[in-house]
Image (cartoon, rainbow, N blue to C red; front, side, top):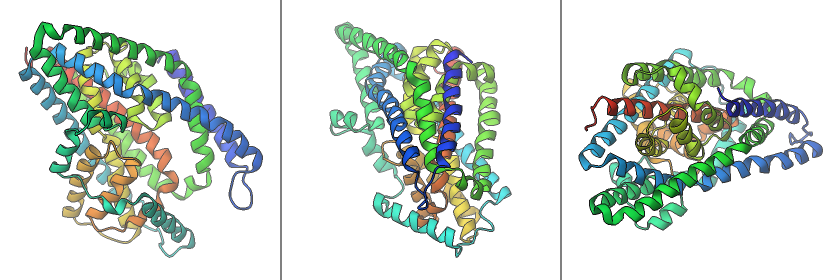
Length: 426
């Protein structure tokens, strides 16, 4: 673990302490007192600034890196093989994560014993109902192949970039890179431009990371102070179930994939991407963490730019192991709380819906909440049930995002190894 990762972790721990102290200063209405509210008001913008800086560089970095990656691959056939292996890996690990979450929630049964008629629980459900109404999620449904294809091909690439529609941006960058390869030497000025842009964006990423410990401190303080410590006890069993699944997936399943297919030490890769994982935990955004993750994989893990530039942007958009696992556990928890016994077929529907939702929700605000509502609707559970878990959603979001980024990083190592032994073509 390098100094940057240590400083970020120190910022997270300090933010945890400060957040807990601030959360104790509440008035009779349950709101932070004047002094605590003022302190939090001064700290919160620092975290928001850090996330905005990271998001600022995502689109130009992805466009430049993917175009460079496609040009380094050199042929449509090899690009197709790399793409199919990458997507196959991502779908496989996502399904494994969901199945693991279902096993954990069926064994631990965190929702049993929750009384819906309890005044506190009733209030939580009212909050959930209000949240659904405010977000207007009733108009959405699980993404189909048709909607995914529409999201893939942008009608206006400038608008897609402005709105952060990453599937569209990735598709455009891949096609643009392929056309550059077909044009040949006449496209060399463009290639030089994107090579320079890629280098500049990576350097800017390094500069932004100097303030990462401060950003991590501010984000952690805000999260803990807002959530408070009282809600943790009431939802401890549910949180333990989610964290158990995430832990098993991240320290057993993914390392096994690394050892079997990538033939590298999981600890070695973990040390290389530790700054990215710490940042993912504090920001709860795999997209915002993407520039740093790519930087760590290229410069510290020594994975080729051509692999990282293709695999990582795609993974940050469609590979959500942690999120998919969380959706499965949350849906089953709500079902157990309502006393609904879901059949094997209905749990199979959760697997399918959570997989599709995790792929299709990347460009949607409140993506985790959105996908959960889709899963609940698929198995005919009341969407208001999200109120039961809203209080700890941010904390668990930080954990599942870290697993998402770890899964993407493992995917890069696996594809790199398969390329080196010729499976993806010469």
